[in-house]
Figure 1 (cartoon, rainbow, N blue to C red):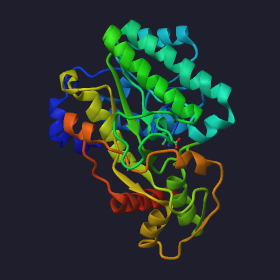
Figure 2: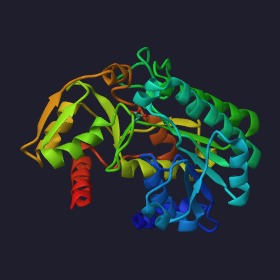
Figure 3: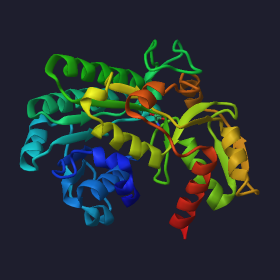
Length: 330
Ligand code: AKB
């Protein structure tokens, strides 16, 4: 990621001389490991502390600091913030859309009570707080093509409800207490690390299955259009947004995206590079979730206010993913 150090944007990052100490919760999920690697490259290995309640693979320990943190234990979190002199909190702990429906009480605890804890913690210790939101924060009553930054939000999953709750609570703490709350609504994020329990996961699983077996059975209909983004764009969006001076921000919650495609279109693009690919379709309960989500995401506010721009379209993403995964299996 050192290419970003040559990017003119970084010269606007006032944090470089005095790097922030960053805690990432739920850091063993799809985004955590990559975000930690990315921010360690910029701010130094020791300044980015990964945390979770799971015992990680050995390599995670070798890469930099990793600690136990239970987001439901407020006192434990206070201790971590004080002991490790935390300045930024990146809060990834959450049950995603499909898995959340299978265990609603747990999703309420992790996704809602967890947010109560980190938001109060961030207020007490004046931390900059990032909580991701999602296309899943919209529902069937929202305009779907395109879905603007501000519109009706009546999600039908507990995941979506918990994300709207986080958005509103964060905005409230910003207005009421001046909390530096920042939130991006991400589309499906595509990376070679497997996600877990989401509705957009097919767009990752297809690469693993096709490159191993040549086949893929998709749990969504071939014409299900959803917004998506390659991991490198996601990491850059998060960091560029975090270092944007507060004066430039007209809001605290922004839609971001890079592309929109259907399973059929993704399969056709992969077939350019893996011609023997065979995809079949067997929709399951995730279809109903996908049918209630945005098809095309309007992220013009992020593009205007802090110059967000994506670099990966579907073709570039597919070639990058094929390279990433071939390297993993070789
Ligand atoms: C999911 O599918 O649940 C997530 C998301 C779009 O937030 N990947």
